[in-house]
Image 1: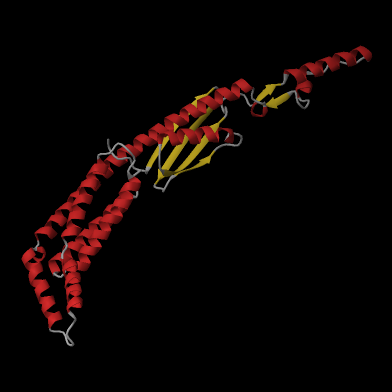
Image 2: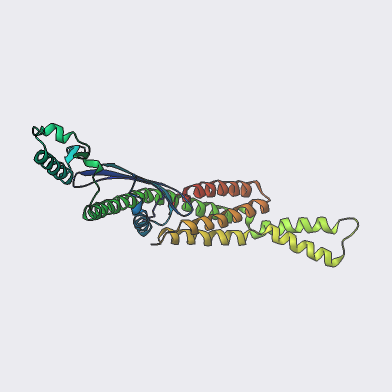
Length: 296
């Protein structure tokens, strides 16, 4: 299963009755799942359902979600309020029974306030509102799925980059292990020279202090532990790449461990070649760290 990136974009259109809309979803990297919705007035009632659907499909990322709606530009902007019309007609009939008057003209009746009203001002029925809500949530689910696919495609590209960087860390670790400066003979010679300096110190060091200093020098000169840990970290990184679970946070922690070993290797290096390898390791690990910031 490829890695999922936290970077992606999706746009999905939907319709219900006369209403038309489109969702736009954008996501970038984030420590957790943070969603910011921009919904038309009155649709904040869907907030909880939308967030639950987003969390069902995504684990991490900062998401910007925008819903743009057109509630019926093709429909007639006006409609007759039949209850108001009936009231007016009954009032006119009653008036004509009590006094002699000519019948009103239709345009005069329609001009009365409340007889004609904007279609957008008519309150939705519960059934219409429920149907619209379901259609909006369904198209949002489709949009989140499209965003998840986009993030997976980006993650597949990211996996290739990370795999190459892990290979390079392994190669540099092997180079450090095979460096002449890291050989047991070189370590013994360097340690012997340092101990000789301690023996020639003036005033002479006490025997117990000499043993202590020699042990410290031996520890500082030996980089085998750092190389072993780097090798173990490379194996763990490959396991994370093959995992079916979101691994961004674990990669972040592992990168810190990589960097710690590279720093120690540089501090222990008593040879230019080892120092150069350590610096190259630090550069690759830093690039690796930048890339994994986008891993879900």
